[in-house]
Length: 109
Image (tube, rainbow, N blue to C red; front, top):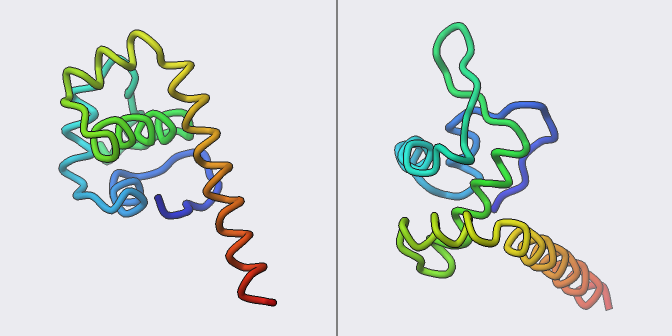
């Protein structure tokens, strides 16, 4: 996932770019995972996703795209053990960061 700037809300296109998917997939996941994704809408009707929802997209992406879960399987998993999965994702993110830093150090040797 590409780094997004730190701000309160993200538009559909920004999230789609961060995960390298089409905006239509973001909207589809919003409908399928409405129990955890509830974006605000501005006066123009554009969806605005919070940081919390961005993390939920990360969770969905991990289960569906990286682990190969079906949407139904991902829904059941999220409902059953959301906290455990979020903890694992946090560990994965930290390990990816360490890996990147180690590569930088190796390049500078």
